[in-house]
Amino acid sequence: MKSVAVNLLGNTSDAEDAVQEAFLKLYRGLPAFRGGSLLSTWLYRILVNTCRDLGRRRARSPEVPEEAVDGAAAPSRERGAPAVDQTLRLTLERLLLRLDPLPRTVFVLFEIEGFKHREIALILGIPEGTSRYALFEAKKALQTAILTSRRARAET
Amino acid sequence: MSFSCRDLDDALRGQEPAALEAARAHASGCASCREALAAWDEITAEAMTLRREWPSPDLWPRIRRELEQAARQREARSGWRWSFSGRLSLAAAAALVLAPIGWLILHGPGHPSVGPTAAGRFLSEQALRDVERHEAEYVASIERLAALAEPRVQQADSPLLAGYREKLRLLDAAIATCRAQVERNRWNAHLRRELLAIYQEKQRTLQQLMEQET
Image (cartoon, rainbow over all chains, first blue to last red; front, side, top):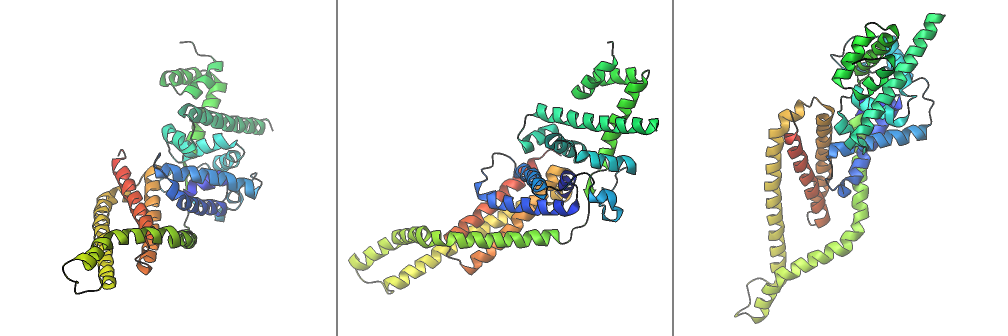
């Protein structure tokens, strides 16, 4: 959950706040939960919405996440993850925060967290096709930005 | 199938294996599409490394404190309801239990050896013990289910299973908080219903967890 939040919000402090708030909202809403979906799906839905609200409230510039600048503050990557091209990784982190909320959320859930489109559709309350399209949109935007940046660098 | 540069986005959008194969075949002879495909693949590969974990030893205690505070607030808010509807329903239940005893006292062949107040208290205490005994049996069966599910919980290797694990931790924290309140006030039917609801949620969660595909 922290990983989802940090990739949606861009810094660990807000991510922890979002996780805490999501648990509280879940607890408060528990009596109203009628079992129409899995509670874990509901929890992730609350977390995503909380991140969205928190992001708006903080109104923090998403240009440069603190981890991208301060290496010491960077959380470690998942154990067993392949070696990383730090430049591309930082570029992706920065670009990710510039994406529109839906493509960004779908990208985080699918590509980073490993959810399936079926699960994402349940979490976000959208059709599976929309999840697939949002993922394409996200990757296309990232691809375009990376190619543009590389071509500009090659020209200089 | 003839594949042109214009078809690349459609292939990436649709993710059909045949179209992707055609795109790769085309890219082997097209520098621009090769570059675009390479960037696409890099994004996929690098995305996996963005999954982050970091120690937050204070987070769960913080959440627990907040949950306990929320539980106290909920209990305080429900107090007024207990004072009216809760007592009313307990009074109605007590009336049903005590009515036959009262009738026997007034119309029976002889007075029982205990007075009506003592009899009422005895019966209510007995009914409460009965409730507690059934609760304990129910809790024990859920704990057996929890023991069966424990290996799945520990091996939670997907976000959904990890979600179940976190939810179970949350429910256990809620159970501990609610149980402490119940122990302070054994007669509070509202608290008992709340505790039962949390246990039922735990049971459903464990069942869903066991039903998850491996």
